[in-house]
Image (tube, rainbow, N blue to C red; front, side, top):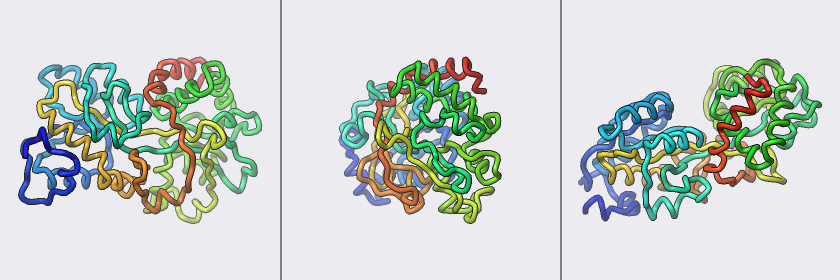
Amino acid sequence: MTMKNLTLSALLMATAAPAFAEGELNLYSSRHYDTDERLYSDFEDMTGITINRIEGNADELIARMEAEGANSPADILLTVDTSRLERAKNAGVLQSVESDVLEARIPSYLQDADNQWFGFSQRARIIFYDKNDVENPPMTYVDLADPAYEGMVCHRSSSNVYSQTLLSAVIENHGEEAARDWAQGVVNNFARDPQGGDTDQLRGLVSGECDISISNTYYFARSVRKDVDGLPEDARADIGWVFPAQDAEGAHMNLSGGGVAANAPNRDNAVLFLEYLASDQAQQYFSAGNDEYPAVPGVGISPSVATLGIFKPDDVDLSDVAANVPLAQQIFNDVGWE
């Protein structure tokens, strides 16, 4: 069986021996999760393809691929957040992929319009709050700017891609003027200067520094599955959460995804790897191993993720959201969101 006629179904029916493919796959990845080891080892066992990994910061990897040019050994770029995937596309380091498997499995709003990148896992960016201090939590992202929450909100810095993508989604859903008013209102409601990562926003609720914060769901779900410093079980009992805008656009979704490098020396292997990431097996492991939501509809989620409940996600086209990132950064600068 050749790589050209190898389908995803054949891949998933394969056993560890004998291997029916050969060669290598050079993976540039900014996903820093130890649990991804299972994704790579399973692919290697199924296909006989050896994965060579180079890991680093997304911007550094994109810059490296640009500098390497036509001589780049990269076959795949795997990273987190739509804005970084779009940045890679705009830098010319990805190429379009025609795959019936990916088109059938990945919803259109979770893939690039030119098929240069595809989302493989999702995280909802939602509102968390201290149930002891907040009787009426904000029910939408827009509500976070309500003066009633002055001095209560913790958030990450404006340089963080999660912050940029959220504001970009507000621009897409509500328009530039409303987004600017929202950003100014949130700044007015800060309990402290923007700082730290998503887990630090949740720790701020436990420490009492803030009463309301925003975090991606997998940071909280991870604390349900295993011990996380600063988020003990008794403290988590006091944390409530809201999936925002359930009567409107729905909860904002971040994604993790990847694409085939523009000069991939092992292009067939690279496409096969992306198709593998869209398989039920890999999709379930994104949830079980890293507490994320699968990108493929109908795939089950892990118990830790299920703890958060059912919700309506925002299905806005993430390519459109990514295009708003430069404007979002300008708005952040204008309103003094550090």
